[in-house]
Image (cartoon, rainbow, N blue to C red; front, side):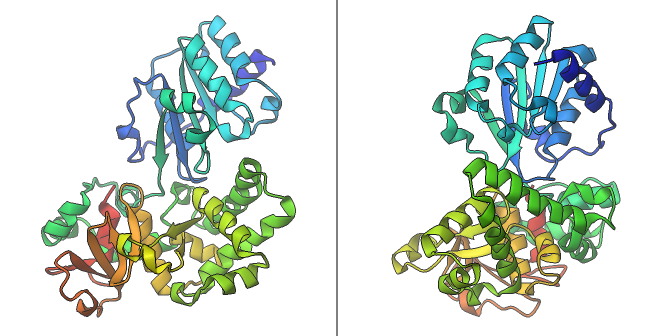
Length: 396
C-alpha cells in the first residue's frame, strides 16, 4: 500500500470543481457524526455530496484522503491499513467512494471506527447490504439513502429559483394553495414533461445530448458491476436482468404476469424472484407489494421501472400509464410505505388510496373512500380530492 500515491490521486480529485447546487440530502446529514454512509443509485450524486462536504472544511488538503475503491491503485488494499497510515500522518477526514468494491469494507470500517479518531464518509451502491453485513457496523454508522432528483430539485436546477418541499399531508390538504404559489414561478407541466425525459439524474446538466448514452451506462454498470459483484451473479446470467428491464418498459403493468415474464426471460419463478429483488435493491426497478387488506388474495407484486427516464433508454417509448406510476412511486417511496390496492392503484402508509390517470380520470373507483384521491396527469391545478400528478414531485 503506497499512501503517497493515494494522496496524490486524492489531491487530484479534491482539486476538481464541484457543482454549487446541493441535493436535498446534504442539509439532512449531521456531519458531526463520526461514520457516515450514503447509499443510492449510480449517477444520483453521492460522490458530489462527499466532495462538497470535503471542500466546505478549512482543512489543509493533506488532512483529507479521498479514495475510490474502483481505482486500480485500490486493488487488494486494506482500508484499515490506509486509515492507519493516514492517521499516523495527522489525517482527519477519510472519504471512501464506491465502497462496495472492497470485499472487507464492513470489518475494516468497524475497526477504523473503534481505533482511530478519524471521521469517515463513504458511499456505495443502493444494493449495499450494510445493515446485514455487520450488526456491529450498523450500530456505528449513520446510513442515508439518496434518491433520484425530485421534480422540485429539477425545477431549481432549471430555473435557479428556490422551491419549498412539502409533506404528503400538506399536499393532500392544501394542494390548491401550494399549486398557486408554484404557478407564480414556473409552468409546471412544461418542466414536468422535460423531467420525465431527462430530469432524474443530475448528470443531465453535463450534456443533454449524451444523457441517454450515460443513462444506458448507468444501467449496464449497475447490472454488470454492482449487482454482479455484490450478489455473485454469474456473468452469463446478467443479460436476463437486462431482458427484465426491457419487458417492464415495453409491457403494461396489468398485462405482465409472472409466467409471461419467466418465459420471456428464460428462467424459473424462484430464480426470477431473486433477480427482481436484487434489481429493486440496485435502484433499477420498484417491487410494489399488496397492501394490508390484499395480502390474503396472494396477487402478484406490481413491477415498475425505478424512474421515468429509464423508459427512454430501455425501449424508446414506454406505456404512459407505466411512466405515470413509475414517477409517482419514485417520488413517494423514499419516505413512505407504498403498496398497491384493489380499489385504486396505490395505498400509501396503509391510509391514503390513490388512483393515477390522465386529465379525465374521475373518482368513481374510489367511491365511499374518504381517504381516496385521484392523481391527474396533464392538469396544472387540482380541486378537492383531484390532485395534479406533477405536484407529488415536490415531496423532497
